[in-house]
Image 1 (cartoon, one colour):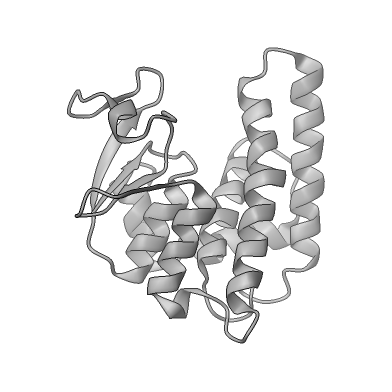
Image 2 (cartoon, helix red, strand yellow; image 1 turned 60 degrees about the vertical axis):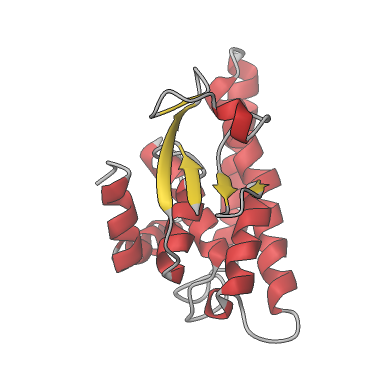
Length: 194
């Protein structure tokens, strides 16, 4: 199995979740500007969308998008999904919110040339992360067990914190708790982020 990623990008969530799951995989770094892999290959042959994350299975099948890949990891590693009859749905609910309501504004904030657009995106990110913080009453999103949605929330909080956004102390403490996890320390080192 191969995980195509760009260090520090949203693909960090899949890298964390796969490491946490104990699934064996190879990482292949992608330059998103040139759409070339670290080996010089055309990444759009693997993923015509041209962005990460992309997970390629040993049989050649490809899965893309944060929500889909993180849901797949949780489905094959049940301890990475919340318990109960609604567990999978709750995990997908959080993943979808993070992907659409937090990650998308980050893309506008990072890449829009218009200052007004950047400021509107920043405001949206801060408000949506504040909403997440209000419901973060435990160590993780779903209580005392790490789920794949925690991997994506961690990446969004990391981006906000490292960009100097005003975010809740709960989220800062959350990120620090997660950074103490061996899987996350290992992943950050592997991506050259620690």
